Image 1 (tube, one colour):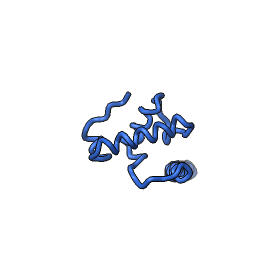
Image 2 (image 1 turned 180 degrees about the vertical axis):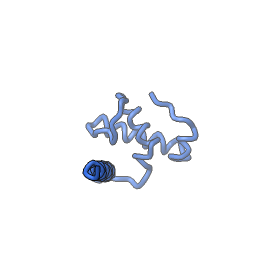
Image 3 (image 1 turned 90 degrees about the vertical axis):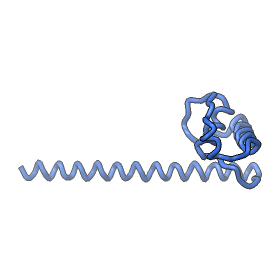
Image 4 (image 1 turned 90 degrees about the horizontal axis):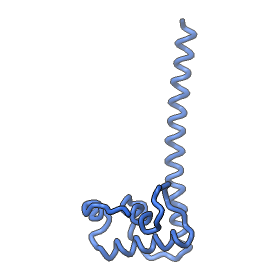
Length: 109
């Protein structure tokens, strides 16, 4: 199990109660079939939930119904996917520019 430092926990919340509630509710969702928000080597639901909370993927907020919560999680996944797609497109464009410059250099010789 991951044991985060006190400094990491303080960034999430100043209340141990809130931390326990966040982790336990998220762990329950994982047990009930929700996928982890990120790829992880962790196996136990509580470890996965604690990792997500410490990373800021799960935050303390207003009470939500299961449907609202599932929708929120789906939105978070989509946001992260969009960020990854944008980074990949940027990388592809850089590669294309480098290839074009290399071709132009060869043609000039």
